[in-house]
Image (cartoon, rainbow, N blue to C red):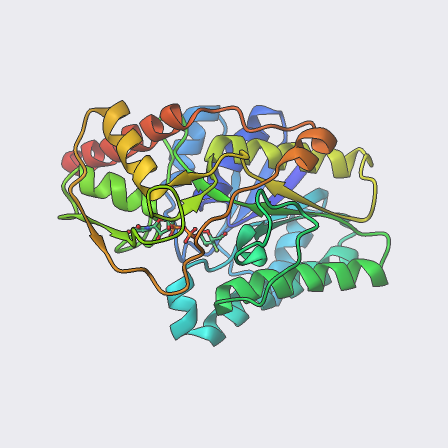
Length: 344
Ligand code: UFG
């Protein structure tokens, strides 16, 4: 079976994608510098799939080490490039860190592809490129809006770097995947989201509050122009999201792509508010999440959800997990983490 390089493969979306790739018979090589993940993730992947993927502790910013890695694994057929820093607030404080980490690593990988005769590239992008869309649900044809943070800018510029590179070298092919809001964990509860420090994202904050690690959740704003006043997002199950990467890789390897660069929205098509997520989480899991409404968070988009029909029709991929099951999986993962830390 084909060998796939997964950069950032011990991260949240990366680790779930490695599981789905291995389940489909692909051989995986992970490159990760563990800056925002843990080596123990490999144990979780092995427990679920029975296979421990090859792992190289390398920073993708390090061109020489990446070159050596490609020499060692000399028959890689496709790359899925997750490795990136992703905290919006931190990117505002440390813009150069974000431009270096996210863009230099992307450039390194793209530059090394022809040297090592690799043609296929899947890129982790984000619905953040749409900013606040004028029309909802948002399609891939919606205009890219000025980025609201250096992080968001790295995704926009990253997409442009890929398009320009492939325009100049038509033997490359890429699929750009624009994620909406991934949540939940693998149903085995062996892998899940593991944020460093205080979580920025909604779901890990919800689960950490429910288990008592945080006193209360702050709901950022209830005065938005939405039915209940809180922001709306398209929350997508992380395993559904991971499966889309397997489809994308197969599409590239089998030459089914319609053009050298294709861009897909990965979402459910359903928008849910912060309060709806909170209430559903409490209901399906039978736990309380203490929370207060506070002011708006700077830079938040009021509402965004995907039109996923292009991905549904062209990739033949659809998000199938319900939000209830997804919120249960997030809670099971948090509980498993608590059990593990008690045992230590
Ligand atoms: N929220 C709270 N309280 C919290 C955390 C979040 O109310 O403690 C709210 C936010 O205000 C927002 C919603 O929950 O309305 C979702 O917030 P997240 O931080 O989980 O997600 P965002 O939509 O802000 O950002 C996510 C990714 C970014 C990415 C962006 C768009 O974290 O990396 O989607 O793709 F850029």
